[in-house]
Length: 197
Image (tube, rainbow, N blue to C red):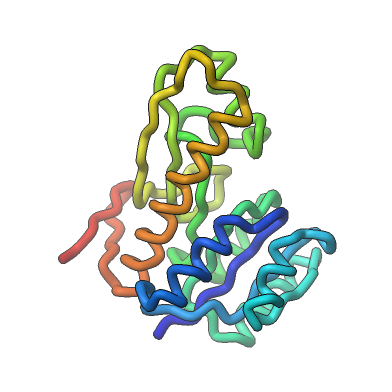
């Protein structure tokens, strides 16, 4: 069973989706630690409620140290609103995945996080949006894409309604991607990620 570390900055609804999936026995992995760069992040409370070690830490070197001390096999950035350094990426190459609330390469990169992503979609007049799970490399939202799913943008959508529907997709594809990673079914060739049977 793989050891998972989750990094959060906010409410941790994606974290909760992973916890629930683990409890159902659908993931061959176990969340060992949840780390947040925000002391008041509700994601830490979610971890404590589920008897998972919860740590507030802003120093990246210490975060790396904590993850290594737990022998973490997979790091999930679940609403972690902090760009990680090239050093961090090198330490855990191809072991870090991120969930982003748009169809990368649209509405992503620096400055595109939270409601800003959905506002960008609406302002541009895009007809579809969705979510993307990708491996993390040294750029912002530039890593190889594992999974994407789209939804239609409705004429009466605002940021709240759109983010709510995108979040449902986020939960779905993040759980699937973690499951595949834990079953060693993902392989990377260049920029392409293949799912192996």
